[in-house]
Image (cartoon, rainbow, N blue to C red; front, side, top):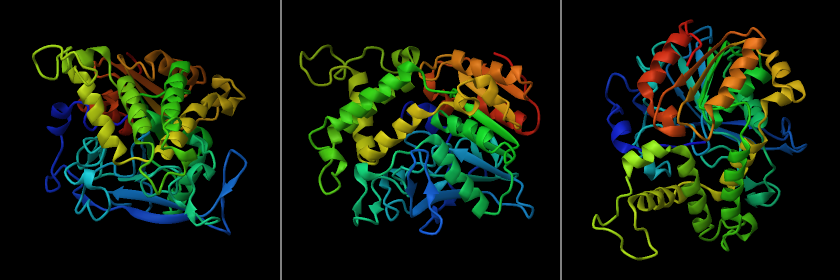
Length: 407
């Protein structure tokens, strides 16, 4: 559920390729398609239907004549369809924060990178309920002519994947080379392998698990409470006002704490004071870590919808891969036909390595083709965005048909 674009700026930005460099996909543009309408609504797990549904997506690389070289990338909580490349005019697209930064997984997608666009056609779409081009709570409800707000139906990871399947089918793709994602994106990849076992050759599941832990549920509950307790929340109908900025800011601050690790925070902040001289004996931000969290919160509030945060975290809570086996993960894994790569990180305390190992063992007991690696990292949950070199080796080897299980 992470977004580490600014977590460790030095480590990330030195890896970014400019739009004119050979290893960059260059300038890209978002595409939009309507995948549900009056004649073909999208049924949801909550028992409701939704129409119309527009989906924003991006494509990197070329789809071959047989349409059998496609990889679907799945984003995390605050991500979007802009996974790689650069926007030529982010201001005109209404996303000024992307004027000087590439897509969120740019260091993994491009010519010669882990997801090599010289070989593969890489696709990424924004999830249902999001706020970056795909229908969500901020979209206009045709029944009222006003933004949905909390009238938007509750959605699940399964709903997201069924909508993604419509996208892939609309592009004429019958079978995917792979589905891949980290964090909440990894859970979507797992859902793909379970829901459409004949449509995917492989699934790459990174920094994720078969379900969110009780601790993860608790963090999400507190984050949602921070938003809904804001006096400006107005029961979700805040689109003509400032909105619950303070509540969303607190939710984001809480989230960022879970994305890091004790070691990464110590290395980055080290109990240093903002003024460098010592305590200011004030209730404002005194330590550098406080200033950092406030900065991250401020930038997030400027680009994300609070209602979308509520819906996406609720979908994360509901996800349980064992449901495909009636609550038994081993039985659920019997459905899977694709090769699976599982990657966890030693310092991740949001999606624990022990929980990923349980998924690996369940797949192994079913004699599935599973490769598991637990990468030693100090970056915490955000390692799936930061440990680029190690991930690149694993992903490239796996896609080429290799890979070994181990820690």
